[in-house]
Image (cartoon, rainbow, N blue to C red):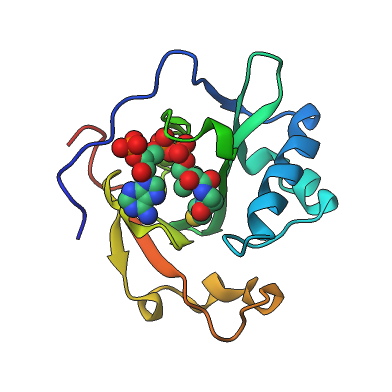
Length: 170
Ligand SMILES: CC(C)(COP(=O)(O)OP(=O)(O)OC[C@H]1O[C@@H](n2cnc3c(N)ncnc32)[C@H](O)[C@@H]1OP(=O)(O)O)[C@@H](O)C(=O)NCCC(=O)NCCS
């Protein structure tokens, strides 16, 4: 279950914005840095461009991507938060939480009922109001990318969900 401990709001210099084509290489670099450490699925640059409209980013003062996350619609009521990554040297400043919140807000705007994420960081998501879920209760379509994962079929990621039926702030 989700904890009651709210994550602190992001500092003013952590601004989440929609990605542009100029961010694609930075997103690609960041995601594949963490993918090489087994924390997430790798992405090709081509995939990054094709899915660019799913992405939010946080940039540093020089415009470089230091954080990213994507919200990818799975079905009428469900979307996946994926490719959540923050540069190692920029962590614990609220960028990760701000990116997750942007995806949640986007999910509400889109009229989605629920978001899910597959992660090795359940505690991080719990602090943001997400709860652990049984992966078997997620639709099979959720697994459409799993065959590309080096760990397939021995998946050890934890499924996290958030119900968007509850208005923000409740
Ligand atoms: C997870 C990640 C995105 C968080 O980014 P971030 O910018 O550091 O996030 P925030 O600053 O908003 O929050 C960091 C806080 O979450 C905490 N946290 C991180 N992982 C956690 C976990 N597994 N359980 C509980 N808390 C966790 C940190 O300790 C930190 O706490 P603090 O604020 O008290 O110092 C980042 O660590 C990352 O990119 N990790 C590698 C890639 C990854 O695992 N992505 C998630 C795939 S779904």
